[in-house]
Image (cartoon, rainbow, N blue to C red; front, top):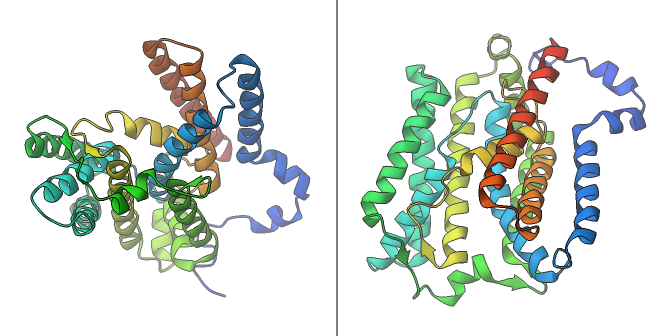
Length: 333
């Protein structure tokens, strides 16, 4: 028997014996779907503008790019890590690509360079976590400040106007294939690809084992440091991709973009079932978490709720999600 098949002693037999309907109702994703549908129905009556095509398009494009970030964050959380720098690194991706473009570099090449640099930032954090032995929280907090400072340094604190970006480049952020925004297509490709890999590939299954019990996983032959390094790098790489899409969508590079974005991304992943202690979570759950938060934000705006109250409500949702995660972990122990 393969020693890596079940290194943390998960009781797969009892899962198989549980009736499908029972398992379905116990899944957090099922509860999220019910909440989303209920809120959707409620808002369709509360605001005449909610079901308009313009609102649906704006909401879907907002959660699609955030969804790309959530995929990376979810995989990192499953491995036992966390990244507070996603907002700053996403902004830095925009700024680097925009600055290179204004310096005369082809926008596609500038974007590729920017994504490579963001990937390097993830590798830099992975090195300090796996080799130096620092905690993800401290390393990503430091990188968050450094990346934001770099954004301000490159731009002098002013947005970069990228009005001369070619139409074919803007298409990746603004275009559509029929009625479907191209951003949604990118989002679906990323979600389907990583969801498949998490469920079906040996490499990504090791992410769960590492997050559940790193020592036990290491004793069973899994190179846990490599897993943590790769998930940390992947998270920043997806920040680079998201930053380029945002740049193409808005036609500018904002040095202050993404302030507080890390809280939204972490909240969506935790709401979707990713544990802050590692070892659990799913791409589907995380995406449902993003959709729920996007739906809440859109609803509050349409109901003309003060922006200050919106922050309070979003913070309360995050606190509630972390509290639920805490109690679920206590039950498992």
